Length: 152
Image 1 (cartoon, one colour):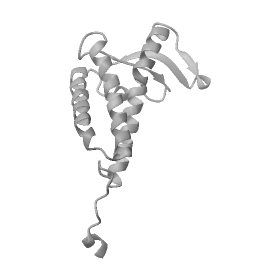
Image 2 (tube, one colour):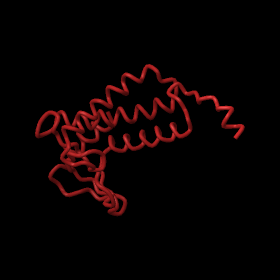
Image 3 (cartoon, one colour):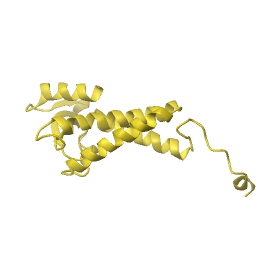
């Protein structure tokens, strides 16, 4: 919801206007449309990215009942929120369903502009990698150590 709200606000206030400069000009708030993935990766693959986002949403919703870990719930919640936020743009914005450009508006000028959903996807993905590396399961347990590994 935060992603959608910020995009509605930014489009209403900043579309076709000069960028707003913040942090001494290091951060620009300006509207751009992204047909690619997070941080403008794979531009022009909008239909494919729409299908991937739909698949991600379905997988997370189907996985949710098995979650017993607050950390995994946070990770998957961030991924679900980010995928859903950008999916709304792809479905409802011009030029049409499944092909709409995602509204980006945060521009630090050192990498492509992004939005709240992109940030959620990155944070959720990083958390998922950390949880996986620590061996934490969806139910919050860690697999028992293998005695053979300890003997070696």
